[in-house]
Figure 1: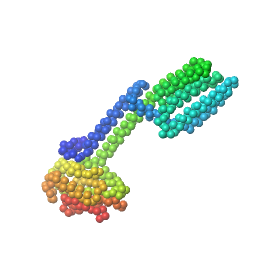
Figure 2: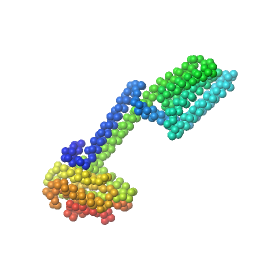
Figure 3: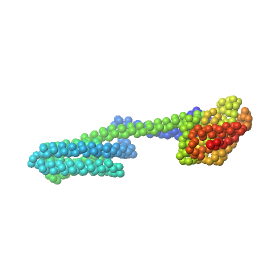
Figure 4: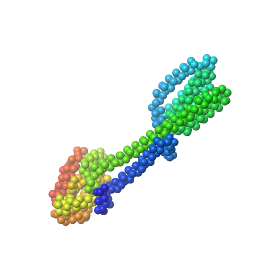
Length: 437
């Protein structure tokens, strides 16, 4: 930041975007940290109280996330669930047949078959929804009705068995089914409670209509108490799930912050600390990729190798601090002169490189001549130069036109040779070297 501030103090940042990128990065990281802090506070509240609530948007996002995970779990568990329920069907039916009162066996087993048929239909609908992504949005709308009719139908059938062992076993099955729905359906506890209570009322209406004689404690144990237990368990499970949900969001923010910081550190490692241009390390990767892209797209690019004339003499005469300021001004002039998608780097010492994309030789020569003149116009005094009384540069230019047999070293060598010729011809000029020369 000290280097950036020094650039500010010299009033040469009209075209430098690195300080602005730094500010953008700091602002983005600050915003992410503030958002992360909000979720950390929500996490603390959730850990302290089961009843801690989210705002409407976050609550909706949480239940959608939980429902999506339940749907994916159901989709993966279709075959195991079918096998397990089929085994349960066979074992339960056999036990019911053996323990049924012979006087009512035929009636009760028929009703038992009817109960299982309804359960299989409910499972089929749920599995179908889970296996077809285009129907996932219907899950939260259809499953409450399945709970209502499924539990209501099975309660009415299983609790009205004439054989006492079957009725007793049926009450246990209904109670377990109610608790299972609360914990594993992915529905909000309030919705499940409403569907289950309505199904209990439906069963009671059926008992009254069919004149089924059933003890009130059986209804209480099979329909009402499981709802209370299931509702309490659902609140605990959803609270635990909310903690996991908030932790996943916090981890997501951490990853975004770390990614930004890592990218920032990578950018810094590819940036020259004095001029804020790119450095040689980043340029090597950049030019190699530029050649690959140009070959693939059959496009052209120009490479300018730039050297400040007699810069060692400048440093010896004016001092290294003044030399640093001259480098900064020249770098600034280059940066301000760049067209879109061009790149400038400090290659080392007083040497700079510019890459111009999608440009032909004539256009590149015009750019190089204009840059030469702009640097002259800086009018930086140089009493030890033998070509002018101000600071000048020599520029070697080469253009890549998509040749297949050209590599990184060939392009750099051609530009370096062009720079050598520019110096040999008297400096303060542009020289063009073709790649095939």
